Length: 194
Image 1 (cartoon, rainbow, N blue to C red):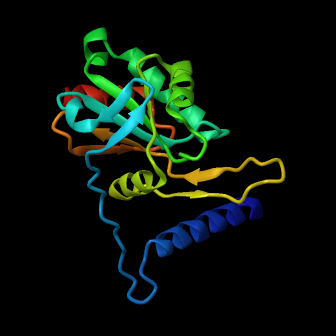
Image 2 (cartoon, helix red, strand yellow):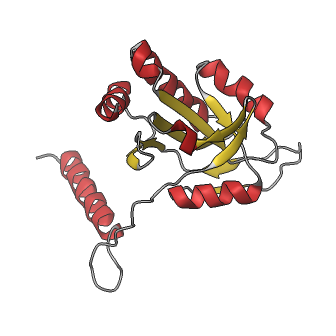
């Protein structure tokens, strides 16, 4: 084995050990597990009126937390959601709703959200609440977000979680889909619940 190969294998082993250690409690060496969020019902505003998850029972909901001015993660996630909706049959799509909840209620209005989500798919819903409503809903889903300081040009970014939450027809949180999940996985998850 040459020295470059040995160095790469040693580096890979060190990284693996560091990652395993990062999952451990510093005092006992036991893994620390975080409880899965429960999700929950909410009522927010869209351009078409209130979005009430209780009124959407019987549908599979794909819930994503994001914002219009997001430069990268949100467009990728919304495009992935659109690809999944397009891969469903018309009947399946009729029983599936993708809702983007704004984590930037200061700038995102229902009208702006409608225009933004329609760019990706006409069946998507953009919803917004007050800052307090957004915080409560995000907490119930275990979503983190934080507004960054305002830049000299007046703009700002909002750092936020990037997973999509899959809610079953009974209103219960069934699955968390990570950023970059394959369209086939989203479609299979939705079909399993319909």
